Amino acid sequence: MAIDCRKCKYYYVTWDPNNPHGCRQFGFKSKQIPSVVVFKSSGNPCIGFELKIKSK
Image (cartoon, rainbow, N blue to C red):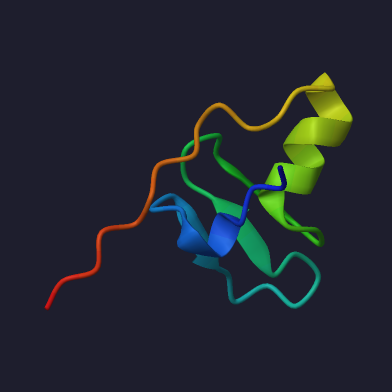
């Protein structure tokens, strides 16, 4: 199952056009969605995912 970083509370969009995706949990920015980077680096799905709670 693919992890949708956009639904994670640690995901953010950066102002850096070269690295538009960021992850506060692991402290990096990248061109790719962070869960893809984590999987390519470790071979495991992201363990830092936490569902974003929407305020009403």
